[in-house]
Length: 80
Image (cartoon, rainbow, N blue to C red; front, top):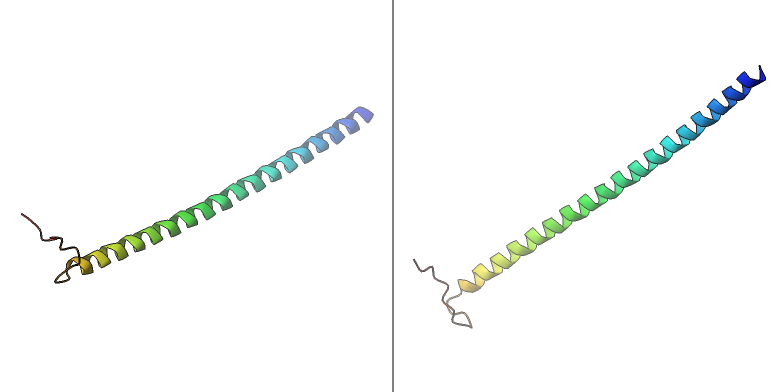
């Protein structure tokens, strides 16, 4: 009878440890997912800013090359 009681206590202890371990792993996984989500948001923001900056550069260059006399006298006509 005592052996059965001790066996049940040991099994209960093992189950508790497994549950704690699973909770710990779940928390780690959740943290990793949150960090990955934040990284994805930052990458998306950086890409948006780069695209915006490139568009602004293209627009300002178009304005510059379409001026009747640019200060550098550079020919920007398509040669074909």
